[in-house]
Image (cartoon, rainbow, N blue to C red; front, side, top):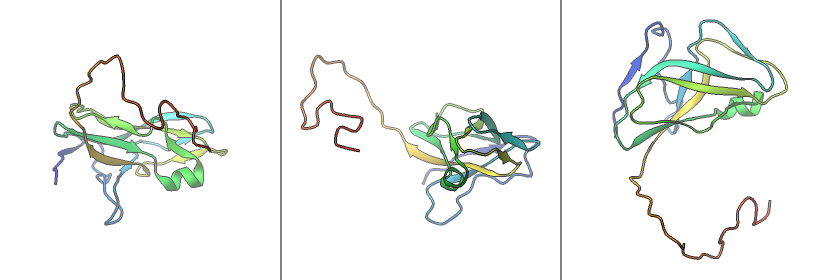
Length: 147
């Protein structure tokens, strides 16, 4: 088990730390650290602060992902999903929300706005080559096997 130091930023003592909402959950819910309600109109995007910062060890990343309930019920998604938080980043975790729905959506302080999933990063070295091995699929992509 990894232990990830987390810092609650000043002025956010009233907000819960990210937490899993069920025993089998993969993601930790993130909470909106805004001072006043914020309305996202259809098509609008906004960076929402969370009031926390992380210190992850080398080889670990955190991914910011949409919450399925917000996506289904309201069309609210994380724009760059998954957003990546690198191990060497020490600033405030922010969430870029977008309203893909048809109605305005109001975000309040303390609302659960996204989830944070941690993962290991492979240590990879890219090696340039003139030729790649062949496979049955080859270069087929973007729906080449059907819709």
